[in-house]
Length: 352
Image (tube, rainbow, N blue to C red; front, side):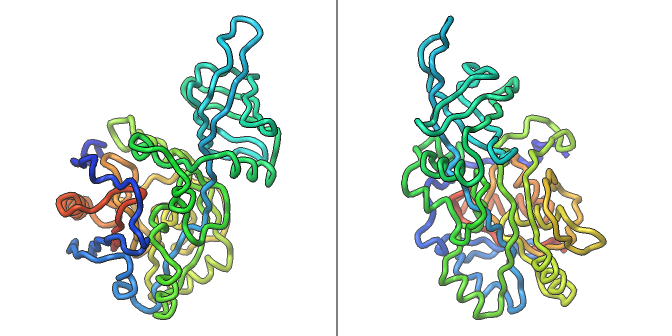
């Protein structure tokens, strides 16, 4: 399909710069299997879902991966110390990350950049664009602790263009059940959940299951090809344990509905299916879901509203139908729904 098929008009004011408060008071647009649209709030999930439904959440934790460093002046031909802005986006080892750097043209292989007196990294690889591979002088938990202390939340670029990250983002841009550090972007559908909402869901017999997919910065990269068949997704690491897979498979075989909370949970689930059964395991996935995809595990998806021409809008079109989602998004824009990471939510059911 043509990427232009997934375009739509989205005014700048529709992009939310802060989340709703309380979180579960965000609006929720339900799109039924028939395409019928109804307006709700996230706290209405208790009434919209039924006993036995299984919500699958992504328990990844966002690392404050936006960092500032100094590259010292070179002895010969240098132009003084240079400030380098670094956004980590893919962990490649206990002490190494691939990152976007700005200005990357001021870096070369072998350069050392300093984030603090205690934390530095050498440039071990460079691409032709902004991407570099960094080898840190710390590793594992020590490295994560240092990044936690020095970094800012890597809020999405369309928010960062309008305001800087601040202390509020440290909590706003993290789900309440986050526990496995490794993402550089939040699984944003999960940001709507509160402890009281989870308690009410449990009281109704709606169970939460947890998987992990570490979200990379590739989620924000635009599609530069003209046809979806030419686009290559960035890979992201995921993990599904055996007990979780067994419980989801049992629920599915009993006719219970499986609802992914967020596109990241959906991608983890749909990446590891064999003969209609969810498999336990871990690895990297670059699954790219477009209309025509056969969904084998999930029955529904709770997700935020996505940007035009994005891989995520293509995914929801694959689930609920191209025309149904075009209609739903047109309705959302006209009726003041707030879009993307801090925006409102939708509850989408697999098209008939």
